[in-house]
Image (cartoon, rainbow over all chains, first blue to last red):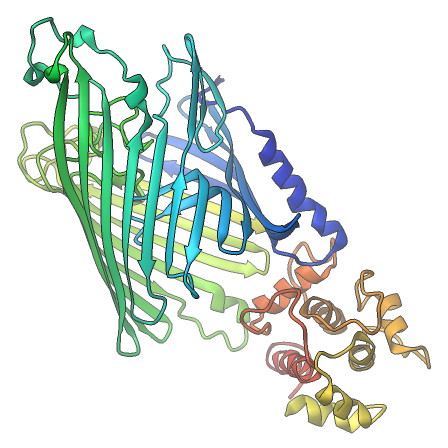
Length: 451
Length: 148
């Protein structure tokens, strides 16, 4: 048995669970929830079974002095059963806030209206202005404390003690944002975000990758440094008639990259680049009785790279320009937003009227077919692209999910997915992908108990 | 109104419906008269035989132990527990283990009875309580043991 990843549980998360359970003794509902989820899945590509147990809880509307408190936390234990046994425990304090009037202080979820780019949890304070709060702005500032060969990363309160030789912590960030949006049937909004990389004050040296006398053009990609990023987003969601809704989302992103410090003095000591990219999404949703249809397409391109999407900006590879955090698309592919695009048709239905057996009304089918593409010949988060191929087509995935809340506190979810890669030369995926197989399967069953 | 017809035909006091319709929010003492009567009719509790309805509701578990003040307003939490108990309207695996207003509300919500946006702290007028009772009776007539 190997423990592949270990995070030191943060005591605040334990406190949240105590808060979650304690009100139950009194018996009154007061804005708390606890959910236990057990899943089992099989991935044909890796030939492995995996089990995932997760517990999540939240409290809200808790009086704390003159404030109103709220918190949410989650804990999970993932187990890979074959071919090798691995345990991956994690405990995360997702949010913990104190609200008074229009001010909110604490760990908050930071998310843009489209959920496409900015999706993170950071500490800070926000202020909501306006009667219906269409306007808000905030400042978030995670911390990085370092001394000698070790560092303590206070980011997302996933408290980790690490050695810099074995783990590159995420950069300290200061993220500021402002947004405005209507709340009516036809909603629109604009958002501005800025992310400053706090390592300006402590830029790591990369003398090893260049030689004295080199120019800035000799600095290779991935050589390190810092990058500040700005985001401008516009979005709208409009109802077209009774049953149709159109949503548009567009983002422009630009970065000022300060690349590797060069050996020597003077103005050319740093390589500076202006990085530009964009992302967008359009979706058209239509409902008819118990059926819902959605056609959606999204994509991103420009100066976006894909060596690491996990921690937002840079993770030590700051010649990359990336969104702060991004969604993944597809059950199997999990393609992230960078040099990629996708288009999907999603159909969901709860077809049973269930006039006699009312539990059947909670039986829902969700079918999704999505095609994946790359917008440039640069790398994407999909790792099996043939270097020789210029084709933009990665493949198509179709998935079927069956969800049934058959009891008030029990929900069963069965997921199955099939990915057919566009194998080179017809597509961009390496022919070795999945061992030359033409399709990859994945399936899972999850049972959720809502406490 | 189904519940009005049902209740006025058998109510111990014809004034009860009128009193409920005028109460906003309905005090627990008044709600107890209705809910104890309903629970007696469904056989969930024995005939109180002259005991004060509020005390009966507390002793029989229709009301949670925290409901100690008969003048306090009726909340969705208290009414939900009383109705789930009165009609044995539960199917979740956790409700029999720990009967409380929180799970009672989940049971009603699962059946589509709970008004949208309701929370445990939502105060009920007498009319709202009557509508809630009516919704439970209608659900029982459709899916449960009560014939139409």
